[in-house]
Image 1: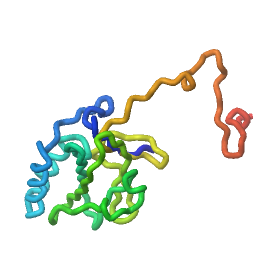
Image 2: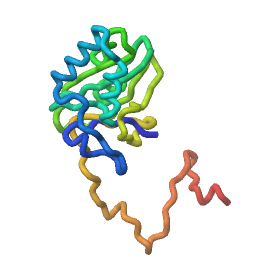
Image 3: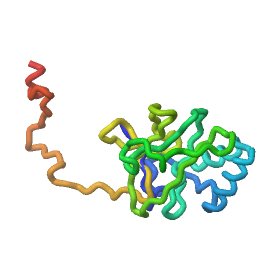
Image 4: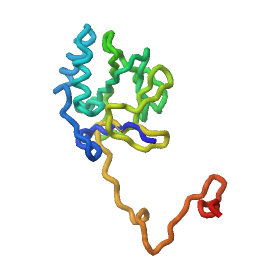
Length: 184
């Protein structure tokens, strides 16, 4: 499985093939803050969320600040990931915008940060961020990458290149028997 990923520096430029990302839904952090404040005063949650969804990407990145938004009727929403040690942390608790079902969390990261995260509703309902099109196969299920910068492109390695003159390898199972010996 994969997890959402946050890579801030070139986050918008690093979309998966076939994914088209729109411009940020708010031209600045100040404009986003003003829209969130209006929502807290009872503003139109549908119009706010339509702008967020139209961007096709999460988190929203303004300089070194990543703003995460999630829509949920849960009583509590938080973000857990590399930046919290994958544990609940007070600084990663979401804040509900007024009486709406829209939650937000923001944090500053270094421009070249690259972090995996998930959204956690209530206490243990872990979700891949539905607005983050980037997925990464990680050590624990599917995740979402996020951060301030895109990961560097993979480097070619001769040790990972198929060599037609070499026989195919096999991975042993937990008892030490190879796939070939199990099939006998």
